[in-house]
Amino acid sequence: MAIQDYTIERVAQWLASARSAVVFTGAGMSTESGIPDFRSPGGVWSQNKPVYYDEFLRSADARFEYWRQKALAAADFERAEPNVGHQTIARWEREGRIAGVITQNIDGLHQRAGNRCVHELHGTVRWIVCVDCQAKYEPLPLLAWYREHQQVPACEECGSDRMKSATVSFGQSLPAETLEASLELARQCDLLLAIGSSLVVYPAAGLPEVARRAGAKLVIINRDPTDQDELADAVIAEPIGQVLTGIDASMRQLLR
Image 1 (tube, rainbow, N blue to C red):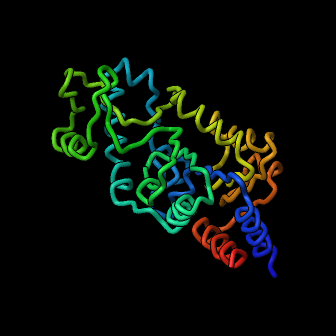
Image 2: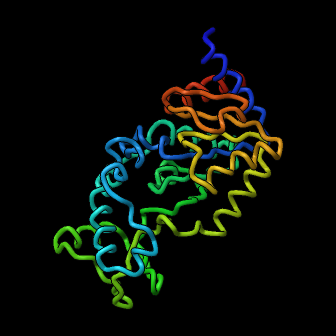
Image 3: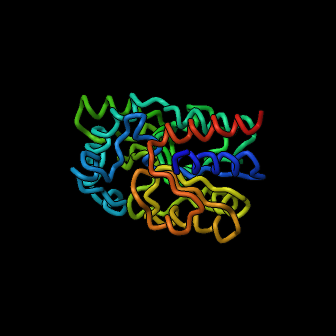
């Protein structure tokens, strides 16, 4: 048996016997759905300087640049579909194998796959919100309006042009309730699967450390090495969909 196969079987055993398992996902979870990792070559941030939240608030030019970048990235989100990894994780939740998902991703693919307990640490692109009056809008009509007029859309409720995705921008705090709920899941779990995250963006990257300190087993599934690999009970550096499919199949063999 190959070392990788043995590790997958061992993780399957842990998942099968877990009292409260949690899945933590990062950008690598969605690359197999066609959404590039923003930090990788060809990603949005490799070609554009991110617009910081304070710049967005005070500068009309910064808001225009924000919408220009958003329009460029939107096509990937619009055509993306949940991949086999998303579908496997959703099945685990339906079957009671996991307590929930904590994600750094903003694409909503976990929910589209069928997950119900999803804590989106960095928000979601599924809504546009007005910073000034908190009105919420579907993104596609506003993106179409921007592309046609090459202007930042204004809020229909209050007229403000400080309209942005319901995502956490650079320099913006994570939503306190979501972070606290995620911390509670991490503290209570006995197995945490960290999938597709470089584990460098804090405070989100601190959640696997919280789980490990509370006594949980930590499994890292990621293409590249992470700074937390030495903390992990198992590290798997193979394609995510393939790994999760393998864990699922092995677990079902054990449960027969």
